Length: 141
Image 1 (cartoon, one colour):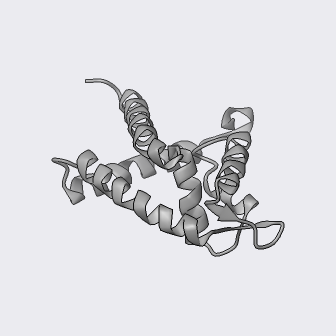
Image 2 (cartoon, helix red, strand yellow):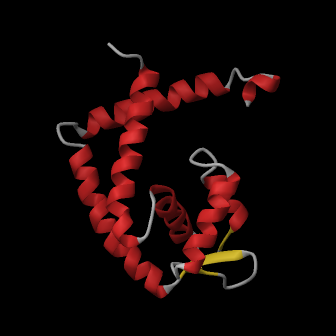
């Protein structure tokens, strides 16, 4: 049996590859879709809050570039210089994206019960907390 790190990497790579391919027709990537979801969840969110919410998903330069891209592509706008919000067109387009993402979720969950999924997520969450609780000094990076 392969170790958990192997399967975590393979799963993340498979998710990213498939989602990037699926989202390409919308002009998005997985990380851009994640940024849009964070913006959608909070009316007039700051860039800093978006960066913080997705810090585990991508580095600051990548997230900053994605924010600029979704701004340029009309998904989001700046109601003030330090805030982001979905445009009405962005909200409409994101609803269409959600239909495709939901179909993808169904595909990826095929043969996996809700309880199995919740158990897997719970185990990964506990492992992460165990490891992060023992970080020290330079080893944290």
